[in-house]
Image 1 (cartoon, helix red, strand yellow):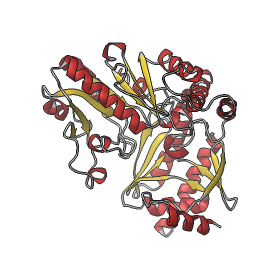
Image 2: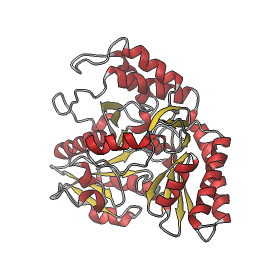
Image 3: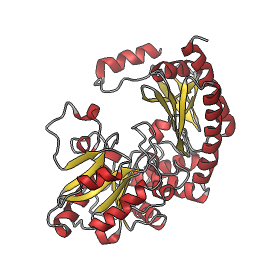
Image 4: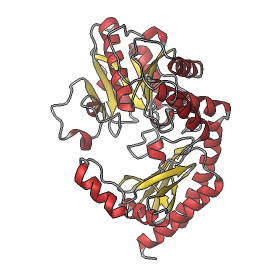
Length: 398
């Protein structure tokens, strides 16, 4: 029973997550099933991870083949899956070099190290990185300082003084915070964890111009926005702005843990011994990621995400119009969308949706985040919006 598994979690697992009362056992495509056999339409995708859907045949086949061949060896040796993935990422982006980690937080840590060494060599020892309020870059002791959210920072002080948090979508604040100690600016193309916050037109371009003027690095945290989610392979393509450094994770391995940071060749200042990882770039993870990215490119999955995202958004906007006094906004790009409410009802709404067979994320007290697999159909979207409306009526007492 579900309660038995929940009791087991309570007994043995550190209470660091307020879980929804669903014990998921298996998945396929855009759907998952719990231990009681109940089916759910999954519009969380493991927090924007299973972009090709659960149990995708190409990825599963690659994992099975690699598991029978080689799981792990030291990074002092060459491995074929790692080199193939490196080639795929570089040849299909504007970046020139890549390093593989195990998560987005690790990727961001690596990018920060690269930026600080760049500052040491080229900017008279500059070591500060400007990040933004409402951002999310991970929960490591370094990245909580980069993450501009007091909720993630309050228990872990003193924080690293080398990250300066300023208001997102405010170019003047970036400029005012820039000093001779600044080596980089790190932002998300869209703030996903912040509530799907989209910058105004010209903001990211302005950051690019400012970094060029000051000869500092522009880092895009593409952990959530990358791997096709916004309707382009990488978030910078949607923005029309090239970063000097880009970090990846989540959808890169379609569920197998992997992260990466990439950079332009001219700012690749790392040398042997500067950075490393026992498991980063291991054969199993890179084989899965290679299958994911190559399938995504060959089948033009990002274009599908763009068109289906537009369809889902139109349905959500119809819902918002029908509940204009309750729903205040629909925002997002591609298949990273948010439905925003006048009141703080997202937790109740998500709980009702769980009961009705739809998994969502209450990203803010007054907003739910929709980030389904990129292979969802129009009928899946119709079903999801229908469930949301039914749940909304229940929450409102209608």
